[in-house]
Image 1 (cartoon, rainbow, N blue to C red):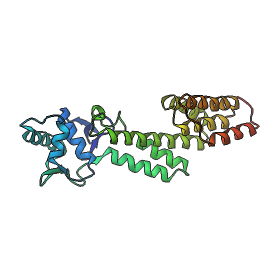
Image 2: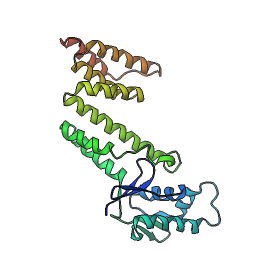
Image 3: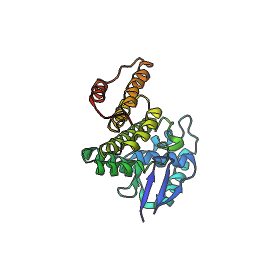
Image 4: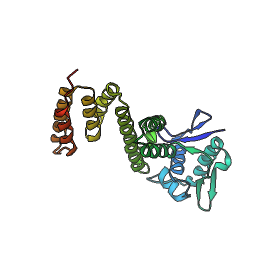
Length: 245
């Protein structure tokens, strides 16, 4: 039986490919905290304060036991260990999608000079996402920073994947994806640079120059100046004898 705790999207458990919802928000919060702890023990006090950040009810600790029991029924009783005044996920009890995602992004980064392998790792990494990290819990204080970090890493994986597409000569496809990407993330200059380079390599010089101007305009509206690499991109465009498609 293969079990994975999913936090790259709504918090849930996947058993042999089938998603099993955890149930109440409180139970999902406890599972998310344990999954984010990296195998370390999470004190009961921290779990209580995370589940009930304002005023824990008198029955808080007995309720925690109920939620932990629910998680154990899904993961298996040995999966959640009681350690002194806390709980932890037992080593090897379940794979965590965020941990797997980070390993795949690391492999993609290491293989950035081998576009086909880099793209394959990126696709596998991005395929783990099912929505915003931690789902409806992502805006809670306990998860906000980690959700932001994971989302930044997701954007890095997207950039690596698109750079691999450009390196593999799939310029037309890359342009289509990058045009959408810069609309969604207008201040990530690397995406703009990839778009400009893809247009240049596809022989679309006028569009490439226009995209340089568009980037300057977007940044200027926020009082920012472009990375010096933009000038180098423009020099390459103007030196390229390729004709406009």
